[in-house]
Amino acid sequence: MVTKILAVLSGFVLSTIAALGYTGIVLLMAIESAAIPLPSEIIMPFSGYLVSTGRFQLLWVSLAGGLGCLIGSVATYYLGLWGGRPLLMRYGRYVLISRHDLDRADRWFARYGDATVFFARLLPVIRTYISVPAGVARVPIFKFCVYTFVGSVIWSWLLAFVGMKLGERWDSLRGLFHKMDLVIGILVLAGVVWFVWHHWKDRVRGEPEPVSVEAEGPPKKN
Image (cartoon, rainbow, N blue to C red; front, side, top):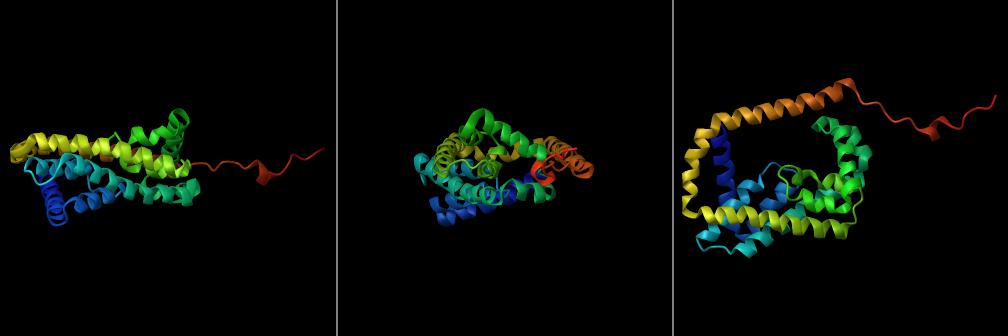
């Protein structure tokens, strides 16, 4: 299961990069950062492998990855900025985004400020979705772009460096993936079940709408 998915994604990544070069890296990383499931954990290590063959240079691969992340992230940033919290509150439950998720993102920004964007770029999974709450939090666009680009370049460099060091031994990973297929499948399935169950509870239970004092008007005098 996992090996087949990796094979399909790997084939798409390799063919895109082979055809478009650095531009292909930018395109693929932009897709990943627009919250479309195309893992950077595949894109950048393969790009690093091509560094080991002499086709690419590590610096330019890292910058291309950072630029692609910036492009995709700006799109989702404006989704959060223009739609705001009401849009996510209204439609987020259909993609399993609960009020709890939004509140947690608010706490991150309250605790760490705009730098949350930078630190989030160094974390798997969350790095892809931080742009929307950043837009909701109205992080200044210049700061958002700087934090996103710098954090994404670091992330891209790390993954590409790993791929470069693996070099010609990349093919040996196929056997490792095959041996770990069952374990990985169970862990992924358990994670998905937990995530869906945890968020579905909130949807079924329903989240109470906040009471607006202005809507009720001032208290009546006796």
